Length: 183
Image 1 (cartoon, rainbow, N blue to C red):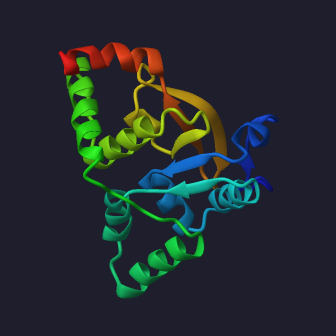
Image 2: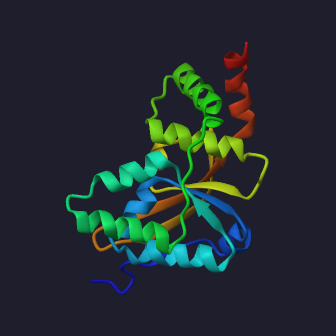
């Protein structure tokens, strides 16, 4: 067994670039933290001490909580959200963005899960802020032709490594895909 189990590996300029950012959390990140993966916990500490704010959406919280087989599991997950002060939101304002992104995905032939659609809608909504990222461990849900992989960190686990990816919208491609939605 290596001494690097649970270690977080990131580029030398990562902290500088991420400081003060708004981070939108995918369900995969919440799950990684609750299973006590030290690399995920290290990442949360790193983000917190570098003045990052994070939040998620109701649908991700539902996905996160649905795996609770016992009341104790559910309570542990709810305490995790409280401990890290992770607010979650879902508003009717996101509905237009939701359908807009859905049409772009459909046009390109890609599929997307509903929680991922809402995460993408929130990312698009905050797109004017260059310090807004979507953090996911399941980056294949967000195609590179629409989402830029700005930072890739590695979480070393006992039997494998897992990429933790900070995404931003690929603005030029997203605008091209948007034209058919508004015409």
